[in-house]
Amino acid sequence: MDTLDILEYLAIILIFAKFFALLARKIKAPEVAGEIVAGLLIGPSLLNLVPYNDFISGMAEIGVILLMFSAGLETDMKQLKRSGLKATLIASFGVVVPLILGTILYMCFYGFGGFGTENFVRALFIGTILTATSVSITVQALRDLGKLSTEVGMTIMNAAVIDDVLGIIVLTAVISLKDPTANLGLVVIKMILFFVFAAGVGYLIYLLMKKVDKRYPHTRRIPIIGLVLAFAMSYIADKFFGVADITGAYCAGIILSSLDDSSYIERKMDINSYMIFGPIFFASIGLQTNLRQIDPSIIVFSLAFVAVGMIAKVIGCGAMARMCGFKKDDSIKIGVGMMTRGEVALIVAQRGLKAGMMDSQFFTAVILLIIISSIVTPVILKALYAKTDARGGAAGDKQTQPVKQTAE
Image 1 (tube, rainbow, N blue to C red):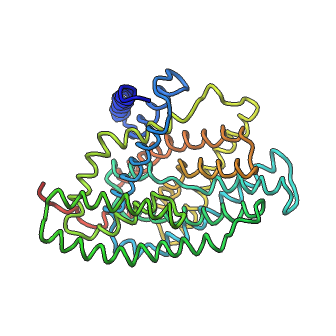
Image 2: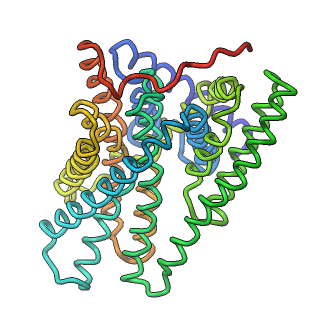
Image 3: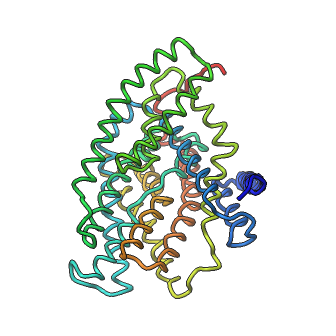
């Protein structure tokens, strides 16, 4: 692919993504839903104007890293500490319930098998795919609504990070049933070491950045250093600890979230994210989907898979949120906010295909879940917030901290 191709693809993606984002705003739908639809339109499903290749994949990955870095920058550390236990419990139920329901769903379609049989392991793996949460789209939807810094928004983000950790543990455990060489204990140890590393090194970086920020406030070197930290933490998390790169980016944002210039850094990141990387990321979801190649023989299972995958998160996360003291409306928002699936679900599915635990035809179900949950979740969230705002808002909708005012 030469430079002219790159320029052509970028121009097509950005103009279609922004046009459909504005169209979505006109009909009072989330802009991210419009950008995903744009990807479907210009991808292989319809016009086939832009191929999904390594370049688009790399740009999309930068987009999701910037998005999660910005989410970390907006995190209220006091609220994070307060919601830590609640987020862990919510994430745990958000893994267990989809795992169980997904396993039962597969066995209802393809037969029940005893523990340890090949059919049972395959069913368990289908359930494992449903444990993954991709909170990137929810984060953008909450930011558009001005609700990211609320107790509900913080809880969703924290639970999603913990959900990724638990999901990796479950994935390794299930694969170990098929592949005895997989070491679950080593995976758990590496993840614990990453968070210890992030806390220890992160605190030293925070102290250093605090001095730099005090000496050079509101200068461009501050967001540049922040961006370097986001990329470095993403690389270290994935390369050396086996943790999702977006988790490393989120941790980088948390490290810098207490700086006086955190909102200044966030605004600078948002320029790049809004103009180019964000639209590419959301459009890439549609670009990866070819609706023309959907296997009719698996369409019924796929629709059931989508329904169970979305409902299971609402039941698991929403019910635990309610038990943790959230009001009914806020509990539903948390459950809905955890419904989205994305690249993590695809990665899990690819690992299962490679390990011989899943047939390629089931990718149809996974892709449909990603597309439908990515479009439906922001729409439902917006409707839920409109409903509570009309009644004067809920306790979990109140901002946890005032917005910092800093000069450009």
